[in-house]
Image (cartoon, rainbow, N blue to C red; front, side, top):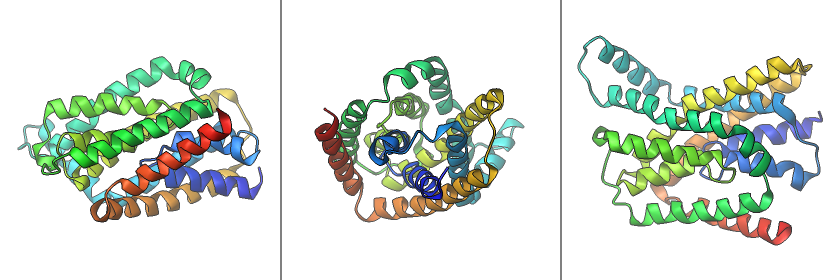
Length: 265
């Protein structure tokens, strides 16, 4: 595969995985817009692995606290905000893992059309803007309830639809439930870790079964590029949420959706 295509895959996945604009939708659109052939499963796995590295490195301190407190809660230790977050991540992952497994073939066959991506891009952009506009933004992660975890977990399943955005829908629900922008983003990023890990593991297993020959240099380029761009975008998103909110991302979603409808409808 040509170097420009490898770089495009890496940067596109890395820069859209955590921004509320849908990484899956952008990767599906890449062959349509560029004229390149589909990049295939090998580079999907590499790109997802790169974003997993980025979020783990960026939130390494949070992860250490959450994991250590969660482990202590298993042995009778005092429960606190971090241990609650650990349980929240586990329980909120179950719906998306289950629904994703049951619907994976249908989604791959029926929901990768540019028009569908356009509609979901615009529709969930409206939801994101509405949640930010009407949300009270007064709660922090210490106030997380089991009902919140259930709602965010099931909402995360909607991100299986290309164009939705996993970070976008989880941040939207967090804002609608009254969480601050930073708290909603923190919950979203922590939830992303097991989801990306499961998706990468499943894709890697399919890759292993296929017996395909792997271009390891190309894989390394994609992993590195996705890691760097994802790390930068996490930092950008956290700062942007505090300063300007979600409006820039909403406007981008509207512009992209309108463009796709104009071209493909």
